[in-house]
Each structure stands twice: as C-alpha cells, then as structure tokens.
Length: 370
Image (cartoon, rainbow, N blue to C red; front, side, top):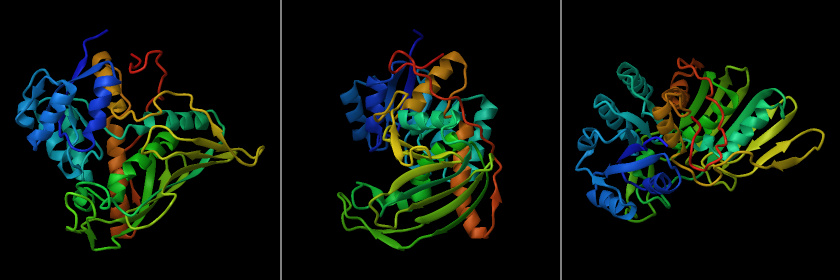
C-alpha cells in the first residue's frame, strides 16, 4: 500500500469530531499529522484524544510544514476564503468544509489560484457519495423513473439558536439556510440531474433578530444580516426544472426532503445531510412507494469520504469527485438565488458542471479504487 496521505487540520470546532473519528478509524489511506485552532485548548484536546503527532501554534506554521500533504479547512464559513487562499499560496492542496467561499467572487479567486499553482482544491459536502444518494443515482441512470423532468427539495426549520453552542455565525455573512444547508441539497441534485443552466430566486429575512436559547450564550441577541427564507427555481442543462426552499423561519415536522420526478416514476431521496436513509421508488405498475435497498457502502456518518477520495487521487493521479468544479458550481447556484431576488430576473450561470463518476464498492472498507 502507498504511504498514507497526511492531513493537517485548520479548525477544531464542533464539526471536527466526526472528521477526527473517521480519518483515524474508518479511512485507511490517510493520517492526521497535526492540528491547530484559535482556541488552543480545542487543538490540545484533539491531540490527546486521537494521538495526533503535532499541535501547531497557528495555521501558518501548519502551512509551512512539509509533512502536510492536504490542508483540511473546517473554520467558520466566512473564514473559508482567507484560510484556503493562504494555504494555496503556501503550496498546499486544500479540502474545505462547505461552502467554498462566502461569495461567487471568493470562489472564482480560489479556483484561479488553485489552477495557477497546479494544486488540488475540493470540499464538502460529501454526503452525496454515501449509500443513499449513490443508490438513487443508479436508479435514475438505470431508467427506473424514465427521463427526469423535475425535482423538488426543501429544508425547513426554525434555526439553530435553540440548540447550537455558537449559533451567531448562521445569521452573519456566509450563513443563512441556503449557504448552510443548501450545499447538501444542491450537491445532491446536481449529482442526480447534472449541472444547472439558469436560476430565479426570491429571498427575505422574516425576523430582524434572534435570541439564543442554548448555552453558553443563552439570552444573547443576534442581529440577522442574511436572508433566512430562500426559494429558488433551477433549469438544469437536461431541461428538467427543479425547485428548492430553505428557511430558518418556519416550524415544521417534515423538514428535509428531495423528490425526483420522471416520465415513468418518482424517486424520494432521503435527507442529504446524511449518508443513509430510505430510498423510495414509486412506479405506476405498483401505485405506491416501495423502499429500495442500498447497493453502495457508507450509509452511516462517513464525513471525510470526499477528503479520503481526494487523498487517493493525490497518490494515483486520477480525478476526485468533490473537486472545485463541483463546489464552485454549487456556490454559484447558492449565491445566484439571492442575486436573482435582488435583480428580479432570471440569471444564467457561468460555471459548468458534469457529475463525476459514481462510487465503486471496493472490497475493503475505507479504501478507494485506484
């Protein structure tokens, strides 16, 4: 087996736990070489718990370390651009949590820099690589719903201030329901239906402030700076028409859904925030939904799947699935809903996207194909 690809973490916040666990226990072709965080105690805890060799004083020390092959950027969304840019300038490959940047302009600059330096740039989400959405993709490609003609996705909730320990950034630049949760839904949709050609959107913020109800910031008031009620229409290159609705403003008991409509049936895809869940197919011969068993691996929380795939690609020279062509297209879609709302017009997208190859079931868990 080739030498393991070494990962350096920038940011050890709330989402880092599952990355730390999976990259040390699930994925066999990577290793965590070191970590850093603005709150040093967080980084020290990760070092102690996962037996990580290095604790860096800051991200620049990490970027200067020749032992680091790929930088994992899991800082807050509005920090993604500066951290990724600095890593690329230091000559490091980068895998970033979603979104790629907080604006289209940030994404374009990062892509330009990565291409100029010949570096790999990829990012989350990677839930579309899990068992449920890969099974859904196979059903579509094998013709079980005929020709796809439309889709609907929604993520409905009343925000994160009731449970998240640090919810303020969800209502600031780079946040909001479309930028936070939209990447899961849009990434799933473009992997199932292909790239998007044209978009229209309408957005608003229903509440000017939010009161935090979770510790340690209980009672603090957050000013809302981003849209929290976002609706959009997408015309896919294939001619299919999709709708999407994300909000932090609504109480709901069925808040996560994707449906794909075809000429010969309908497919219900589970919450793309996860890797598993029920895939349900309705065919006219039966007249009701039937659950379809998964035919791919990774149905449990497999966060880090996209990074592990990128690491294998770094060793073999093949392309990887969660590359910047995907994350840039997703970012442009997310931002264009707001831009369309502001301009009151349809907007043609500039980025182009074709889904990467589907997952391949390697006989060994945690190993990718060459």
